[in-house]
Length: 576
Image (cartoon, rainbow, N blue to C red; front, side, top):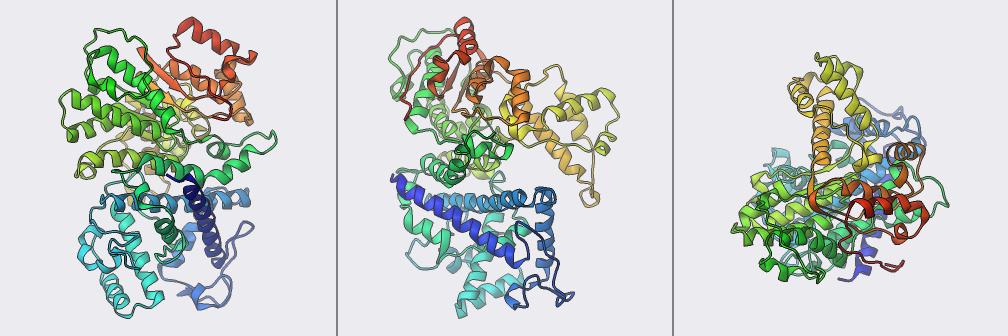
């Protein structure tokens, strides 16, 4: 796998997507400094914002879509800090489309699309993707067509003018994304209207054409080099520019929204295998000393393994990556679990669903990384079961969101104890996208009672002008995250964030909750994660080596030496 090709493509794709979105926003009278009012030449049916060019006029539903864009910008804080809000919004739109394009490419190469028809390329080598020429045949797979859409298909394929073909491809691409939302809701949320206005997919130029032409197809093929390597490296290289920008800030504190760019690094394959083989793998061998799985553990250290007489069902083994990034560790753990399940007599199809629903757990502060981790895990299930995506499996992967609840929402909760406990949870998770997995949980709170009461609240969607249903959904998701955070695991394996330039919020939280370990986030994770283990469980990390020598980390060393056992340790070079 030529990483230079991947890096070049990902960096260029990010730049192209961001520039295209900015150009489109400019035609809507929106930039980082102001949101313009419509021009006086506008009519009730047509709105103009920059000139009287008909190509830039908004008509019909597009008028409302622009209002959605303005609302999203305001949600990002445009009125308080227009430049930051504009930048964050553009980044969000760009990575949403990037993730979708990468996911569709992976699915079409492996023939995982429900229609079995390619969306970005042609198996026959045609200039147009197969979805264009087979549009009428796959109507049901795309949710059916309106009369207007049918007319567009017929007219475009007859006349084949560039404008009509672009319109046809945009329509089909978005319908494919929305159809995939039914089987992959964690990545393909139903396309917001404003997203349709800000990105036009082209099959004959731009990021899609470059992906097909510049990245060899075998990089996506699971029978060859595919899956986690290509998805993980594309994600890391896509973020390489913001990463360099943040880490070279000359000692400035890293702000909340900069943490993902500063800390996310794709973990090389051999390191993932070393960590998982010597944690989950070794835990299993201790309980199955005659297992043939031992031969599969290429990076298991050749130490004597003492048998433990403990009859634990494989379905009860749990592995957590609480800084999961794009999911590399979880994907390899899936493969290892599959070997264990097969040895225990399960079919591959049954094992795939049980692994995802019972054995793998992941947490992440960055939604875009979560989307790719979720996608990678779902594709592992699809690899072993053709109908896997139609079975609606439940994953245990989550991304953190800041939790804010209006005073009015609390008025719907009559039980004073439940209301007080919910307020504690909301306070703890108000900065969840910054604190993430290291949030200290008050385990005296009865989460089940909160869940029962909040889930029982009934808000009619059509009348929910205050967004109570959205708050309800977010609370219930946060309660699920807390359950993941408070569970004990047989293995906790991660490449934690390396960061020691904290803003005031994070610095205070670390000082109040992890004072002896607060020199760097990675040391907090070392301390935190060993306390999430069952007795006899293993925590695996890739971290910088400074914790072994520098005086600042002495309390961490004492805690490990006095309370735990170092099973294996590799000191890598700084350049590693």
